[in-house]
Length: 339
Image (cartoon, rainbow, N blue to C red; front, side, top):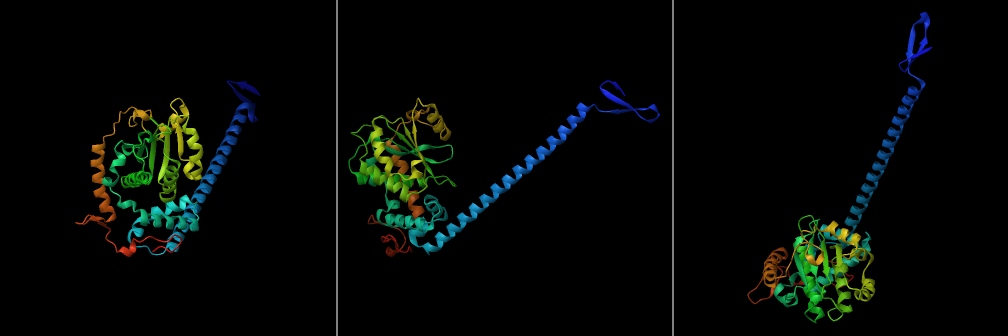
């Protein structure tokens, strides 16, 4: 046997040389074969995992659809505003809020329908709560987050009234307005809370905070995507220690504290908002001044839009009717069948 230019030659019959690859290169070929088998095995494993994941997702979707149909069945036929409120998307939000427990979702929804029949949030009009909004303590922003959600800006330091009931009506009006202005396919809103000027003298009373939280998480489930509390003062911690116990776990997870010197919290906020849209009060680049007169005009236009959505119309005597019989809007006893 002789070697030439990296090839080994073996003497065959008749003295002819037969070339063969060196043992090292034969080993490399074996490694390639083993590598190919490894790649195939990895691909098969990934395929199986994806198939399993797809199967789990399919099972989850079937389970959700089953729960949805079950809730529709136990609710029975709906009429009037109840029927208009209880859309398919609405039922799914209540199921999501109660971890797809049909009984709990039904109870929650019935309590909401009872509340709506007495509080009548869809009938509140801007002129009734306009005085609450004079300082711009709560208003709908003229921009959306990166996901197209309506944004409410809350500035508790701008508190200008003392009636808790009127303050809550004002906030409920703006929640309804935020929902009215959601783009198609989007069901949630975002809150930005600015603590400039906040102090114990302008602080929201515990009762007001409790009632607000109750309305938001029990009667507008899965409507809030996230609430950013921007640079709250240290004295807010004492208030927060009390208020946080009113929040259910799902709502609690949506509350995010942002501090300008905390890079991680700032980056989280910027993952939701473009700094070119954000007001400077929230670390953005836009100077945003609240114009009460302009905002009032906008709310007046939205009131007309809301009238059309809910089938409301002004009568000559100034009362509002909903186009349905009075029996369809009487308060619904909690726990009774919904009709």
